[in-house]
Amino acid sequence: MERQRTAVFHPEGVAETPLTERIHALVLRARAAPPEEREALGKDLNGLLSQLPKQAERESAVTLLRGYMENGALEGLGTSSLPADIAATKAALDLGYPIALEISPERLDALREWEGTADSEGIPWMAIMVVSFVAFITQIACTSLADVGALQTRQLAMYPFGGPIGGEETSGLEVFRRFLEEWAYPVVGIQFAAGVFNFLFTITFGRLRIGRKGASYLYLALAVFGACVAVFQLPVINWLGLGTLTSATGAYVSARLLKSKSR
Image (cartoon, rainbow, N blue to C red; front, side, top):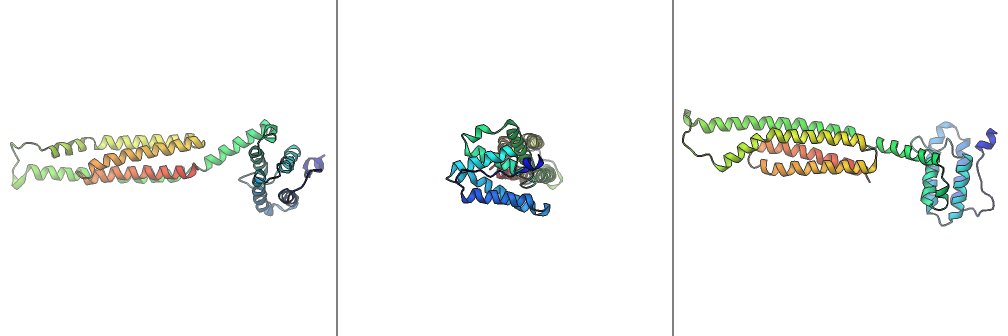
């Protein structure tokens, strides 16, 4: 019974192709190989299985995959990151009708579970966390320096030559400066809260390809917001604008990291 269960399917009455012959020979070799060699052979096997939908002789490919899926000849083969059974299921789906309709629900569930695991492992959450942390600390430092600079500016303006200024009208630039100062920490809070939300969204929904793409757009929107605010801050309060721009840069880097994983 065990011998029948693990017997390698070799279709009869169907014209063989160089590719199907190579796959059949590799399956036989992988089953007989010691464990330390199976990983390398499994990688080659997965590569050949992925080429089946591209060959012109569809009937041979369909017959070979149907036989493998029926008798479990690929069980235990492949690599640690991609089992050969999963590679065969993907190849069958790429081949389309009629074999795609013959795939069992169990095989489809196994494919979905593998895709979810592979996607979640591909999220660069550690890199995003480090980038966000460095950007936030730098922004706080720059904002603190902006506060010190603003205090020194007021002292110099109010006490020229040791006496306070009186009766002078406040300029439009000074009003704008004070407006930026008042909104400095609310802007920091908005960027920090949005960054935390984006990170939580990423680790929650990032295992889905559409979720990972959505998270990259959220980070990109945060980067655009910070860049726009920094445009107004930099000419008036340099340190404040630099801090806001640093946070925007961190968001942009996070968006690029996620976008590279969404392709």
